[in-house]
Image 1 (tube, rainbow, N blue to C red):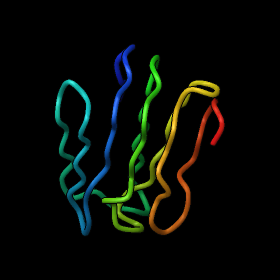
Image 2: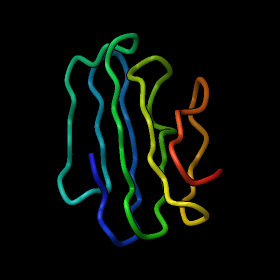
Image 3: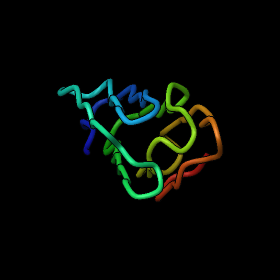
Length: 89
């Protein structure tokens, strides 16, 4: 998934199968996600983005945030940190 060139407030929510991605131009729902198998990659692109996975239960889905250096923020994930490509936390 890709964010916009403006600041995005991207949230991940879900437990026991369904995962919702909010804060992008199109709302996304992933049904029956399998935490040990499925992966979600979110690229914030430009802008000072905020990544918020706090509504996502542990082991619901694996996820990666692609970040820009020094511009993006993230809230801590429940059950461990996500993978981060680029940027810094």
